[in-house]
Length: 534
Ligand code: F6P
Image 1: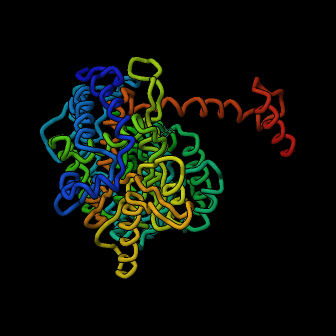
Image 2: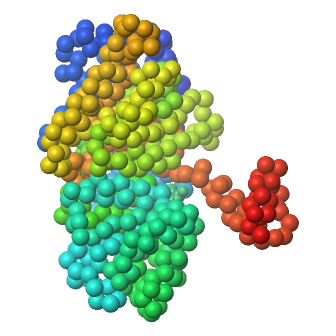
Image 3: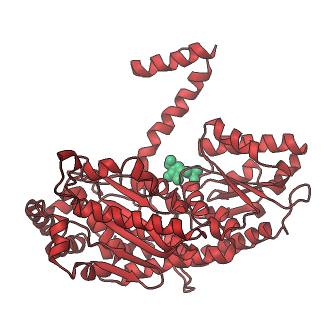
């Protein structure tokens, strides 16, 4: 393994940051911004034709940034990225490489993993997905009754839902509006039931998306959807035309009854929450077409190149990661808000919650020991301006500091320009108000202390390329933070216990025998349900 397990608190940089934080607590953004006219110049990164990233509104000085850079070097962050992208098995608790970057890498020189060229594998499946998506879009691939598909239902959960669902919403302006996209995730039957009210069985394609093809929610929904379709079309053979699968487990897909021709694969080196670049992106590919999907991949690849080559102060994911560590570990922040001023990005915070919290919500380090410092924060958010009329009160005047990412585009994807001017004026006003505040007012209630830190990610326009870039920025940020926190960002053991216990409870809930051994609260609740079900 080419990057070692390092307890960050033992590094000189961490200790220096602790000492520095004591004095930095007195910094105020009002002073930092007003005392240095060149601050923006020094603390922004422009990626031409894509994005302006402003980090001037953060409670940092040149010294803070220098120490954070030292910490990154002490924790071997660049080396860790190198280990990841070259296919080392850095997901050690699962014995897997982490190569979602290969899915968007246009290079053709082989990248070997266990004797196979992952770039070639990725291209092969991508070409199949492109061909299938285009045939659905132009109607060459027809339904069982010979009709064009006009509805697509993606059945999947977690990484097999959140990425494609978010991206399909985000890129609606680039999509074929004659094909209606639906997403069913929850094992709550209401989700599938409501979806089936809206679709025409003769024109509906079901995509069963599951890396493992064992996930309870997805398998239950897929089976119920199949039963519904067969009942509606009156012939069990109809499923051959109406069901496709996206999975790493070809045998399980076959056992379910979906043919190899209708199965689009990926591999165990693609983590669920990093899989939107693989066949899991099928709904997006159908929505925006192969060309649009290629641009989405290209945007992500551009960020892979950016972060692998740029120095710390010009490296957006590294700065994002470093700032998050500064607030979390040295200034006591417990949460991080993500606030897209873009209705098309309304699912982005939900997507990011899985990407970030399933990756870095961990208290055991890479030595297998309990960490002595905070790791991943709570990530949350809603689109602006809606949030302004809901929870911004707490961001402005609450007792905690909540570092926030403000995301918008200069050019809108709709014709209502006056609306867009209002949207952007709110966007700009909020970060200014949060930083500067209002120190004097008639009553204490109207005083705004300010000093609330924000990053601004201002895209030129939310294109497929830009969305790919946006996601990749956060993916790298998450990994860098995991490296500094010395945790395994690519496993998710914390979701297993609840799954196992639900499997044990299910037969007890449905049966009438003696209950198993549970705590008194759970036993009473279980019994209460059984009493009402009889
Ligand atoms: O809930 C945990 C999880 O394993 C996620 O990591 C994953 O994205 C999701 O379940 C769905 O898994 P699958 O794609 O295998 O159905």
